[in-house]
Image 1 (cartoon, rainbow, N blue to C red):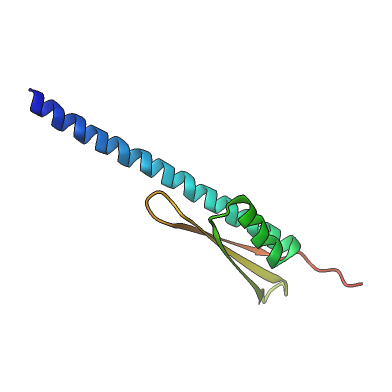
Image 2 (image 1 turned 90 degrees about the vertical axis):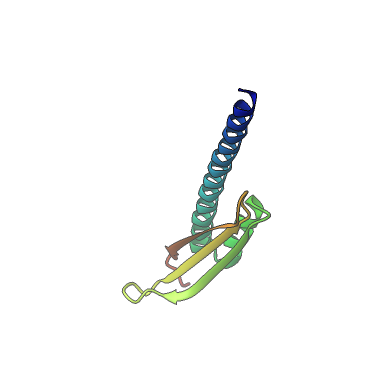
Length: 107
């Protein structure tokens, strides 16, 4: 009876550990999605430097890549693409957000 109980408790502990690690990984991914979204919004309003500073201010370990300069053929507006990569519990996670830039006023 004791050996069986030890095996069951060990297996149960391993399963609970994997479930907790999975929940933490999902939460980290959702944080990366939020960072990418907020970074894209900052890029649309303030440019590439605003997006980078916003993301690194909120998550110092994050790696952010902002791509701008592509022009949407139908509207003629700049399109910003922000990719954020954050270290996770099990592996690194990344998320991407794309947004159309605000029209620039001349004058």
